[in-house]
Length: 325
Image 1 (cartoon, rainbow, N blue to C red):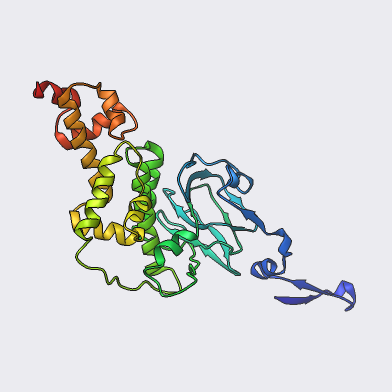
Image 2: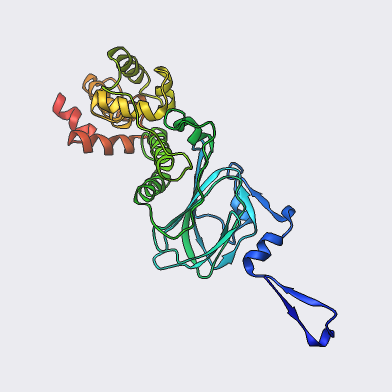
């Protein structure tokens, strides 16, 4: 910030010249808008073009993929925590204003930014760009972190888009694939990815770091039997991690970890294999059509069922029936 004396004003006035970051600080607070990804098409007000992909039915998490021309968005804050992810084929530079700080970002492919809920934020892109936006409820960190962090309040640390995070990039890429393909076990897989993301954020990007687990040797025999019986009785449903974890009164994080220690498989893998085993039994009975069996064992349609069945069994359901007769 500096003052400039202008001779033509005869020394009576001084013109105040503000740097860009100082201008940001002096802007009226009422100009800060709210961006809530719980509301359909919420980002359309802030970006030139609507997203090319957008999730709509995921619980507590929202993903959008964008292809935008050069633009600048207005000051805002999010009601959810947000991770921005650059997927452009070449650098897409610009500036980001985040929690009272400003930084020029080169934005190479795979770089991520973290924008905690409630933080004043805006950004611009000097060239056309492709990027993803993942928004998730702050309660996710609280839910997963209650067994990991000795703290009543978990604070996410802001991060400018100037480097990659391989694990977060892999999670975002998998979520993008799931959004495009909507495959079997979608909710279960998304729940697992949400939990993995929360654990990673708690370990690396919060003011209080995660502590080590004291659990050992997996679930007890009675608890693993309870969960397995429940899975087998509800294979036709789109089961969720939080639903299974609640059966044994455990956080999703510990449930996933201890279930794998007990069975050698993640819940997602175990449920998929259980569906295939039940399908094999029903196919041998020759009482239902292949389409009906797909529904009975929790696949969204016959095409998804046939693809996974062949991948895991080595033959199509029709070929399996022929061999069984």
